[in-house]
Image (cartoon, rainbow, N blue to C red):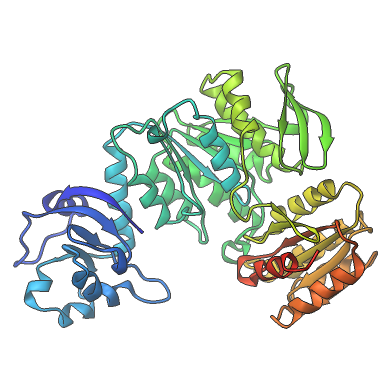
Length: 465
């Protein structure tokens, strides 16, 4: 990633509170900041990060590409491989990822836009886009919304770097894998408002318990500005725990429950969505699945808190379009619901309900891949999906992956088939569906990203009509 970042070296050194090396000349400037050596150019500040490979290994590449300066962890072995002239371009820090966050926080705090932070176990991206839609009345260059799924300790800084003197609103999505990440991201972005979509089981392998997930998500309040507000579904697990924590933190909570909301009602259910009524006005929400309507209600609560008009709120919902690979509907021999982007128990349940609604009593196949990052809870959560599917015996169930087979074993009723999860299984799955379901049937494809479920989508779309 690369983006504009116009600062003097003396300012950068002041932000990072590091002493420059004796030979360092602190009179230069940078124009861009990048974590990719391939994108560096003259005026770039290169930030090497540790992932599957150590980004420090690419410092020489960044310098050859034209990078003017680079961050480097103190005493890193790469320094010995650099010439004295190259070492003059080093800005030494203890941790390059923390330094990236510090630079982003400094940049964000120079400006005064309305920042809204969004987190949750599922539904973050759709809710983020809906919140962005609330501000369609503003020029596009005044609204910054997290791009794609850039919601981690690398992506959030690059969202914040996009803020400038024109920016009025920032919608900042925040994800996590480990305990403590939401607090760091929230303190970095310093939102005025925070919204938790739900509290589920995503990343329970790392966080060890449902309560720890609730604590982690509610850490969003720790970075809110004074007089900030946290929006939270009343149906959330550990709701009382979070509200008590908010009282201690002096954070106001605005909660909601779609099923009991007096202002938003379902008037009619269609295969592809709902006819809704909000404060007396009717309009369509063009996505199936009641679960998503909780997030819609949360966005409405934010709009009401900001005193947006009924028309602005309704327009945000009516014009929403699902992001790529999020319940995308594609037509070939079958109506294929491509929800291959990711999966956890909450999003899996939501997608199943949506596909049942979309199939409209016509033949349906559920192709469900393994849900990852569930740790010791994996079997339990897969079996819970199977138990729920007992209520829907009609759809053909196909599981993909060893852990996912627990769904079929627990379901027991209906037609159930399990495959190990190898590439060689894909033609067998497609042939099974072709032999079982008539043309025009609906097929849901969903699983964790590492299962590469899009391969099954592509194979289904390749069938001759």
